[in-house]
Image (cartoon, rainbow, N blue to C red; front, top):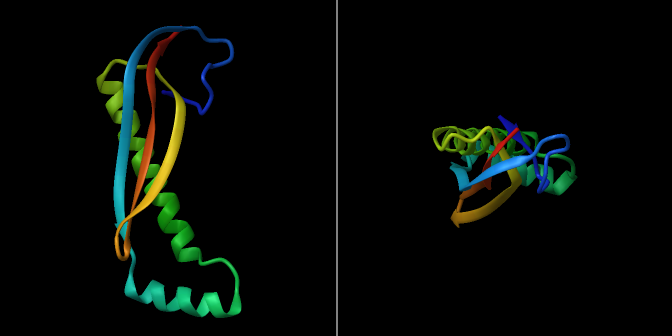
Length: 104
């Protein structure tokens, strides 16, 4: 599956647009991580546990979006975007979305 953020794929021609595809996941914070994040906030620097958590959330959302596109018969996804939002205190949603297409 080709996944790009652009409207076109160099060297490929979009032959059919199949529609919107999306994948999402919701991740909750961990109390132990929050304590460490609070300490990191005082001294500065990267909060690696959160960096890893968000990277895993992006990959999971991307995988779910790709699964949906494959079920539609797509071989590519164009205009891919990621969005995150807080759904409740201590939990955030990561969404990947794009346009499923057939290319040749």
